[in-house]
Length: 211
Image 1 (tube, rainbow, N blue to C red):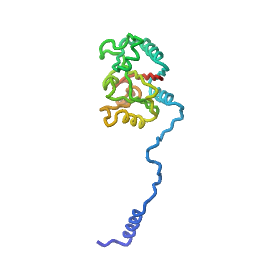
Image 2: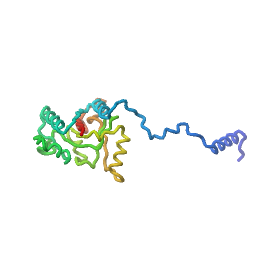
Image 3: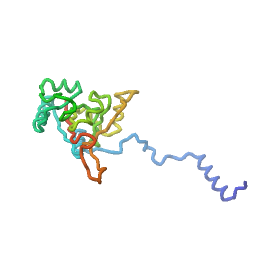
Image 4: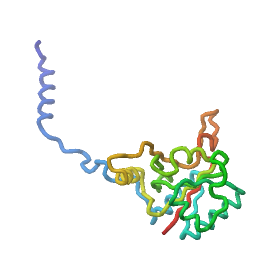
């Protein structure tokens, strides 16, 4: 098959170009650095802003006493009588205060559920949860009200930081389910009307404990 002079010139240029290495136009754009920068001094402030923007309820507690007092005030205000908790570490924190509302009755009649979490993502106001938590998969979704008790050391800036922390915490064997809960459950599937609390809790509280 005879190649025309014009086509041969084009192929020659391609061969020459491939034989000569070309410097990357953006040598530092390898995805190792975060695209997003926070102007806030602390992750607590950033998380609180983003979480409340998503209709979440945020309460900062500087001690266990303050945590117990704020929880009691919320339960009294909402007139809850049955708040369920399946996390031994959280039950141990609350038991000295003898909350009468805790673990009363059946799981199917609960008013709210208290769980821990894996991490809190400040930039998106998200809560990272997994199947490895004592509360399991169902409780945070089944409960009409979800109350999360977290610590300030569980705050990370971005989603990728949360994923890295999960890999460090569970080396070689990640939990079978990892979820990112960003505010109360919501959907606009029906006539594009936003409805809150359809596929999960209609209200989400985060009590952030600074120890």
